[in-house]
Image (cartoon, rainbow, N blue to C red; front, side, top):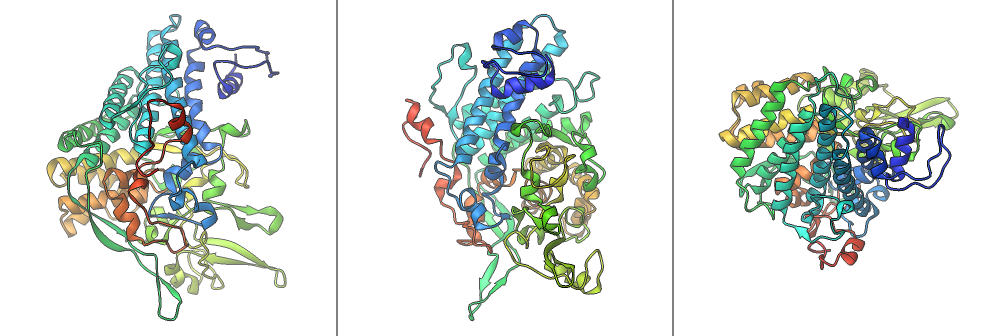
Amino acid sequence: MNNKIIRYLVAVSLLALSACSLDEETFTFVAGEDVAAAGGYDQLVTGAYVTLSFPFEWGNYANLSNFDTDYQTGPTWAFGEIGAGNFYDSGSVNNFYKYYCQSVHRANYHYYLVGLINNIPEKTKKNALGELRFLKAWAQFQLVQFYGEIPLFTSSISEGNIPELPRSPIKEVYEHIIETLKEAESLLLPRTDSEYQKGHVCRGTAKALLAKVYATIGSASMKSGEITVKGGPGTVTNPDGTKSRLMPKSIIHEKKQVAGFEAFDSKEYYRLAREKAWEVINEGEFQLANSQEELWSPSYKNGPEFQFCLQTIDNEGTLYYNYLTSDYWGYPKETDHNLWTGGYYVQRDHWLQMFDDWEDERITWGIKHRVPISFNQGTGKMIYCFYPERDSVYVRKGEKGYDPTDIIRYDAHLYGAKLRKFTAVTSPIDGNRADFNWPYMRYAETLLLFAEADNEVNNGPSAEALAVVSKLNARNKSTTAIERNTRQPFTQESFRSYILEERAKELAEEGCRRTDLLRWGIYLQVMNAIGTTDENGVIKRREQKHLLFPLPPNEVNANPYIETNNPGW
């Protein structure tokens, strides 16, 4: 059975498939036990991976992980639900929960099925089991971060487990995730092994996720501490009724211990995070790309900086590729003089103003600076708008690709950063689905997690932490942490804030910002410092209930062990 057939089968279900015509054979029924009996370990692993595609078909994953943050904005019609805090019975919220529960179920069940296979090499079998254990841990980590206490399925309902369970305490969920990742780590092949398959997770991936889980616990369980975030209101209303844009200001926030993490020892988990991240760094399974341009080139797809990515397949059914490129970057509309359309989801100007290095690749190469917005029929010339406004010094001189005729536009999706990372596709960027591999985990994050953990363990950054972050700085052509420390030595608090800021810069729109604010216990403070709305009218005011997404109403209504939804919903 070839891979195309298998991808189709698992997208529908490995449990049952009605007769349909494919390009080789017709199958009237496919059961998991049949696939196991045939030795189809690879189909079973693929069947678990494919559940990760479901949240991307219509953008549920990206909306949920990015919209509810301080640095993302866009038109109110796009941000009126998740971006405005309207989470209850949202399609994105409900689907995220449903699909990741499916991931847990399928990873559990297929682990059981692969265990029944005896006609494959032991090394191959162990790796398949390790991939399934990783995927289960990944799915449960996503669920507990977004929804808090969840029903904890340690085995699948197909093995006899009852379909409804009560929600388990956060501590119990995290302990099971850690246990599962340790098993995955012991089973998976290293990326350097000759049998490793590009695009799959490897031993280093499990270790990197374990480091992230430990750091999440370490920050969330920390009882107190200060952390500075650049933010605040985006505009001010003048006495004459006009509005002026504001630069972000440095605001010191007092962190709060996150509910559910009271029983954890913050220092101990940060020690574990540092230790595990250091293992990943020293073992050399991953390495940084040489530049942002190389990192986000189509030819670098699944390159050695990417630890774990969504795997997309262009032109093969709507499940396998997505609209992220056209939604976040946009495209020239050929039927209308190549005017730019799409690209409605942008980083607020406050995000760009965090950068004190104007030559940092993440804002020189990494964002779109010039957008064709209208065509003058009389002159036959295109009118462009430019971003950011501080580049007006180059516009007047016609330097760095600008023209003196370029103008400023403050439209919601035009005065903000469109990130070039979303152009890493091999298919045309034309408003249709494209093969964008969402970067769940990157080696750059492991470097930052090591530095974060080192700072908390040692009550300030060590030489190793400064050196590790400086490697990332050098790649991005920005001032290194070592240079900054020489100018003004870091304290524990200032380095903590610096690392959080570097995460916001490096991992922008990769689904990390919301969970970073939450795990540090500063989500409400940071969001509410913006004011009721941002400069584009997107509601940013948040309440206690917004700390967790609500469970889908159907889950609450159908599960007899769940009597109430999350607080406030």
